Image (tube, rainbow, N blue to C red; front, side, top):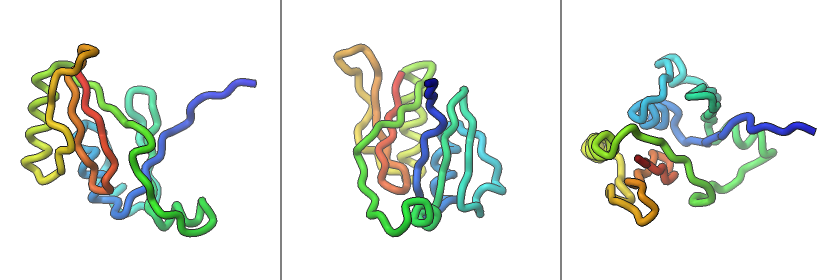
Length: 125
């Protein structure tokens, strides 16, 4: 039996608000996706999908209360300066910084921002 990772899905309250956040992280998402209930995005060989909570209710056969902090989505940067610059831009844009950039004991530069739905998104360099 062969199993491979097909996608990582994020369920969102408002599609355009969520997609605007992920566009700032460099994902190429057409503006036409803003009105959809489900969007797949290919990025460096990984498929990230976004679905509205309404579509999740159909998939999960009813309402499921969202619960966070059960997984990590991390975006890799080419340099520490690039990470610091984007973190600053995102927080100036109004996104909530959860952990300011700092050097970690394992050698990475690390920061966390919250996406519009409260998911913690790691930034690493």
